[in-house]
Length: 169
Image (cartoon, rainbow, N blue to C red; front, side, top):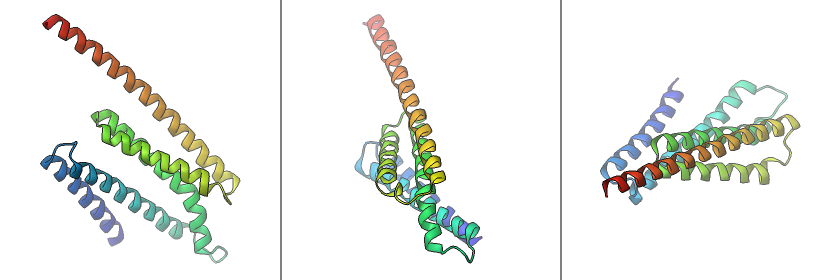
């Protein structure tokens, strides 16, 4: 039980660091941006470690070595977890209209795709390939749809602002 408390503690502390830097400095300041990147990195690192932990706890048996299980799990579950994290960051960035969340989201998604196509595709079973590619494909389609919707909203806001400027001027 203490394991999960310490995990929650680490994520909470990194989140609080980011919040304090974003309140002390502007969103565009280097410290605020670095603290957000650090917070996302800590979340992804801790979440990935927890996936390894859950894999060992749920699939350990005498027939499989722990290294082989972890290698297979990392090739399947990491891209899915990172993709979901990227989607969540994109959603938060769209809702809060925060560009940095969207940039980090696209960076995480790009790293996920690069990892998937260069490293994970080798030696993965067919079910794992199908699961990873379908889930990342769905996430890519959803993110693309979200960006199109955001683009439309931004254009509508620009038109409204121009109309307001014309009526005021």
